[in-house]
Image (cartoon, rainbow, N blue to C red; front, side, top):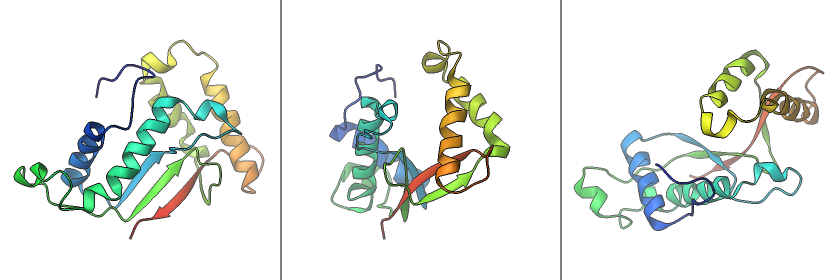
Length: 156
């Protein structure tokens, strides 16, 4: 979407862009950043991440399902759509985890694809591994396992 680093805001224009994609793709589930600051892991509270999370949750509810929101999208053939659940990353009270040990290398490769965000940080793989290992330990997985944690929100 071509926003400068640190400049993203949860504007009505951004919400509309997200609603357009929701109505076009019609997902059952969305994975979003937490719109809340996490004081226990401040690095996960980048302003862009929180703004993206806020815009995304507002796009999911109420905008994407509301026929009166962004009526011009109806003219594009994009009918209202109800996303059934949202998985919130970096939430301070996660209630679900996924063991990603076997796919961790793919996660790192995907992060490396964001060159502007990761090329300057040679410690990123170790940092992400340590974070995932802490997540795994917190949910009772054996030592050496890596986990992602989420807060699942039922939007029905």
